[in-house]
Amino acid sequence: MPSTAHTSSGTRNRPRAAVAMKPDAAAALLDARSLAALGEVCDLAPLPVLDDFTTDRARAVLADVEVLVTGWGCPPLDKAALDTTPHLRAVVHTAGSIRGHITEACWERGIEVSSAAAANALPVAEYTVAMILLSGKRVLERARDYRTERRRDNWLATSTEVGNYGRTVGILSASLIGRRVIELLRPYDLPMLLHDPYVSESEAAALGVRPVGLGELFARSDVVSVHTPLLPATRGLVSRELLTSMRPDGVLINTSRGAVVDQDALVDVLRQDRIRAILDVTEPDTLPVAHPLWECDNVTITPHLAGSQGNEWRRLVDLAVGEAGRWAAGDGFAHPVRRERLAFLA
Image (cartoon, rainbow, N blue to C red):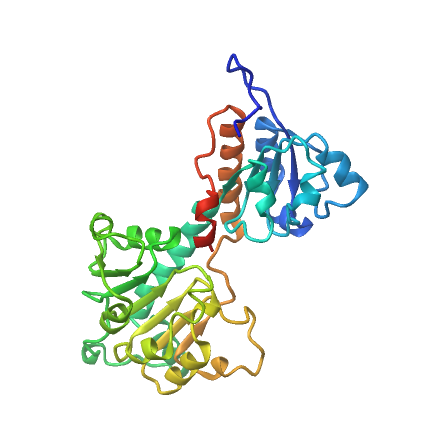
């Protein structure tokens, strides 16, 4: 459905907009600068933000809203919610995944949807590249040992397995994040393999990677970085067989979703001290205090921090402001979410 937020003569008319997300998400994302920037392109409803579409205030606000700026904790935009928003034409999401709040009812209404997934992909890719390089030099383990022993090792006796020259990096899925990792790794002497059944050989060549089967990816890579979304077909995709096929001292990095990896199998392989792992995501997202992964010295677990945090939230809001401005001017979204691609999104 085309935007109604501009006149036929092209004169810009600020659409009525409201913010829908958890209050703590709004407090983190929307500082005075961000609100002022949104106010430049939209007629923004006064705060507080909407986190419940069933209240009298929400119904009053939604009655004339054309654009909804959403974030973490936005209630589902189901038919009941949309019945209270007869003028809603666009949703601008300030985070990555739209799962949980965009429903079939939105597509049926012809509502245009934008996501800041591209902006959120960058810090995840940066984290991944940092961990690839740190793991190649065994920086985290050697720093731990140095703190414990308080003396330097014999650097001339360093194993030839240590270092980042010519290490093969396997990318599992050319998702938004996977593609950013590939882009950021290009300056390094790290040959890259890719497994993604939806990427052709010519597209892989354009990306600068070699396409391989899933088994070959794990068997030939020094580092395997997981970027596939969690779908019914990818749950447990990284199986015991694949993990045991990895090269000795191979590294598994997962910044996708914990359930993509067979976690019980990973624990068993880690206990054999054959491979290492760097996990920013686990299943569940916060592991129980007695979970055996905590006891594995060859795994680094970070608290789901690879995505946007701190000053990186501003990048998400800047993208959302740009999208709202484009839509208001009748130019459409630069980062649209397509209904037909929804099944492949994280």
